[in-house]
Length: 409
Image (cartoon, rainbow, N blue to C red):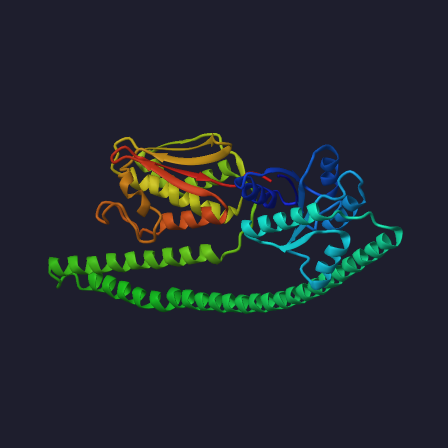
């Protein structure tokens, strides 16, 4: 049999075609009633399997037009639908001339049985042409069915609109609740930061002050070992104070709102270098600053990025006889990549995954001082700007840190 499938969904046509071709049928297809009529005029078709809800011309109207034709008016028609499934729809299908009415989805045997029954009916009788009163009656039923469907769809849309309104109210309530929770959490964090800043620093200052006084006023009666122990106490206190400062700075980078503006990177880097001027001069560090672009960034946070990166470069070149630092820019895959390069201690790249973690250090404290928070701060600031940071290094041959930031707006 040569069968014509009419459906506006390509996937539906493809699946039904596969089912019917597997049974040995030749299959044509059309996307709507208009295209189906065009094919019926040009091809010999044994049966039509049509969806109902389609653009341009739906399945009901297609049945009416087929039954009007003197050329193919007796072709069997099966309406195959997942939308029009009420008793009134079935009655209308019969009225407009459909031979069978099947609800989607249906297995292949059901469709094929409907085809066989429709073909048998077509052999036993033909569809008489409609008289004018009959056609008027059909069109009236068709219009009534469409009105019912529109009314049903309108009710569905009203219910959906009510659900959406209710969902929006629920979401607004949840957003307000979540905002309040975040504000409360921020207040708690600020209170904690205040506590750390004042309550923890106070005993540290006391320990540092009393140990310093003991060393100054009682050094004559303290043995060398005792003086060394007190010196270690002061070093520990100072390290703890630095750690507290870095932790507070790390927490602040998460809460501080971004105040982006156009920043000249050359000026920002030069201000950072000025901060290390004495160290650079005393150690005769060779510093090269290449051509740097402008970018959109928070100037204060960006300054913190370069202070940490340049400060690290200076720290880890301390054991080099001819220390060198280079700050520059290169374009990679359409992005501007700022880099800070040194010829210092470097590190093994197999540990690079730990590089930006809080308290993660790749060198011992007795080799290079630090708290292990600086690079975590840098990464957080860069990410807040929508950028990325990565590093390349080799032990004894220095390290290079690459940062991408937003383009100028």
